[in-house]
Image (cartoon, rainbow, N blue to C red):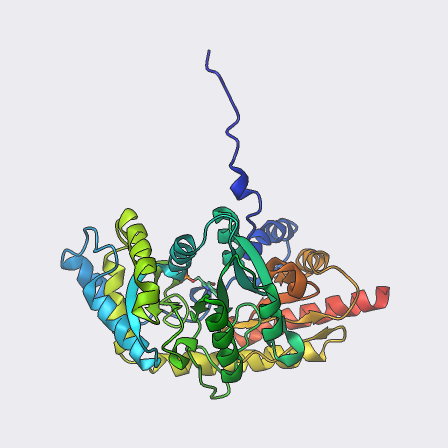
Length: 402
Ligand SMILES: Cc1ncc(COP(=O)(O)O)c(C=O)c1O
């Protein structure tokens, strides 16, 4: 007789949610009911008319043919690391102490949080913000404290609010620029103020710049690490978004700042990269071709996306009951629901009644995300128009019922 027992999951998984994918449960229900689905929930350019650069595919294929199929060095292959160092220099990042390759920016973020804080410490996160950070903090027993992104100021970080959240247990500040879910690009003035705060309180800055080349209106991106040599900063990047290869899982971390501040931390990071052996080996050979090869595909992608951003901005602001700040980077818009209905309920109804799948704003942080939803404007113009027609009809019905 086998003794059957229930395998109870650890408490540390209780708080983990990931709204971007959780919304698919409702979407599956709508699909079952026969709705024509339009998915505007996942930021994966490959699902739409964007393609990984052929020269990157060739580089990976050549690496496979040239026997690069064993484990790679734990920190990454030298050719890729060298290109990331050059990329850091191009971004104007000074005082680079270390670079390492990871399974997407996601793993670099996980490694860096794990190496930074102990249970009971806290890390300050943007709200609204990308939910991976709070999920990892839950797993690691790190307290998440949220600072406000100010919608009235084009979703710029509220610097005063950052200051209010810092205490003796604070270890770092996370900055996502350009931002997911708001699509906003941060001003130099705000970045300088955040550096001042970090210096005052001895905090590490995590600069998530995974969307740094997806920009509109001829705007320029400023890396926060380019503005200081004195502040310890980890800048995250990768091939997932700007180079359209999210499934290859290639990301990286760039550590900059004074060597004396970062020496032990870098040691801890590398203990972890060694423990997980290596990142997928052949894919790392695409780093050099991506970062140092022909860059013309980037403005082509941005031109396409800017047209979709324009449609999104225009249509959302013309729908009664919605308003939207103009996104200036990445491929997200974060409209406000101007009527009294909880955002989760709004999104569930929208998905079930129209088949248009978006993500509820509170999935990106309860405080500032509430009353909003996130749209991914990667699809082609006709699909977006169709989605906005559906959203418009849905809003008209709701407005009538108020
Ligand atoms: C702000 C932000 N950081 C990190 C990631 C994860 O990137 P990767 O695919 O390189 O793990 C994403 C993915 O959507 C993101 O939006």
